[in-house]
Image (spheres, rainbow, N blue to C red):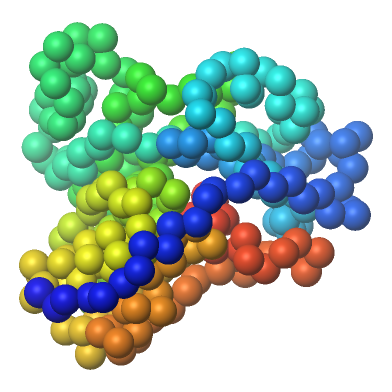
Length: 267
């Protein structure tokens, strides 16, 4: 394993709120909203009928409660489409392995949680599914499509034309890593992090664990790189590093926040 000398440069995660000039509350029933629950709050992402981003927002909170969403002004409007993205324990399974729909047996949770466990389950491809423990998800009291963050990252990776690749998405408290080898999913995991050093370590550890070429296997990295950013340090070790951003990013919005919403644009 390479030794990396990295200063702990974890910066405080900060709230933000940007609404573009084209946003009109009276047209909200033609808009789509994506709500993402994070360990320290929520982010919101709104698009219009042409899929242009017209509003982004992030709420930071020590305690996530239903009241947070109940009081959120953006959720007082009606939308034509609502998606909710959560995080937490999950399992990726071959469809052939699942005989019944008791998915809780496959989740990495304590046995005493299984009896009252709630799950969401979605397909990842023709032959694999993802199931996730959703008890800790605090969702708005509106009809919405539910997704796990790893589901979106894995879907993005599986749809890539690249034969071998690693995909990493950073939040203020964890990093999601997905690895594709020969167009097949070989790894999908979440690691707790507190610094640039932590994120760089887990990425390089996955390269080593799966014997991936750091010269040939590209790394795609996105997420909250304003808070935790291992990229400057990884450039010494990995030849090809991409930073995917939303193609529909609005010029009125600050570019620094674009990587935070790359996953949500893939819904």
